[in-house]
Image 1 (cartoon, rainbow, N blue to C red):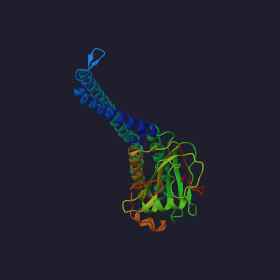
Image 2: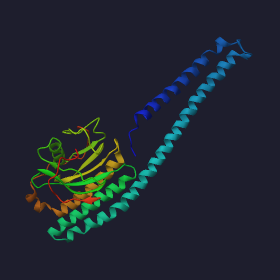
Image 3: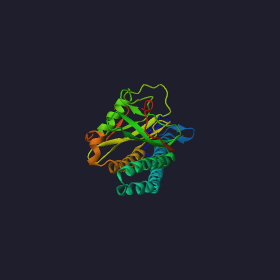
Image 4: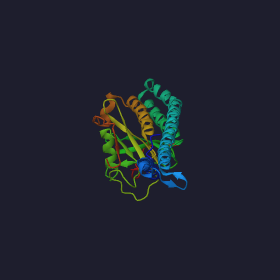
Length: 298
């Protein structure tokens, strides 16, 4: 699923490449010694024949290693394609109830639309956590809403691991960059906070190691909030996982836009910065009602 190979695996691949090159080099060297060994008796064998077949054997061994290596890579690619296809089917099944909830929102009155938005957020967090849990260890999905004055990101819903995520309140070293990223429409991917912490991160312990945060932004760039998924394992979010989170964030943007249409945005403050949805890395289930909490997970 677009994972970055571990250090040991990368070392093994590099070592195997060196072995293949060494076999080819030694095989070629033996070929070049055929004339020098011509007429030489090596324990009853012609030296030139031994050099010839020794060189051939080494070159063939290198070719076999390369073929087997390519075969294994092809099998891994086929498995990856099957996993991606399975994920797409799972996404369709998991998101169908969410789409149904959103489709009913336009027919509701204002206050009921806002209430329906909470149900939509609950469903989105639970569905996303369930989707990712099959290959992201102990995934936790969280939906945040940006306060009308832009002063805090409040937890609306979360699903997955049992711990309630923290909130982001202006004035915190991690909160300010998080709120600014949402207002700018920036996606953040953290592969491992221990080696590459996000801006403002000052913790020495945390219940997560990797993290992806996608802003919930309308088509015209209005920032409503943020969808995040974290995991206690590093490098948990490859391209497929990031795409999955982005799809759910787009659905949530539709729901937020229905609950708070453009005509009512004046009551929620001016947050119409043009969104930049390109991912940034590192520095670069239950529901919870809004309420001031501690520092956010970032």
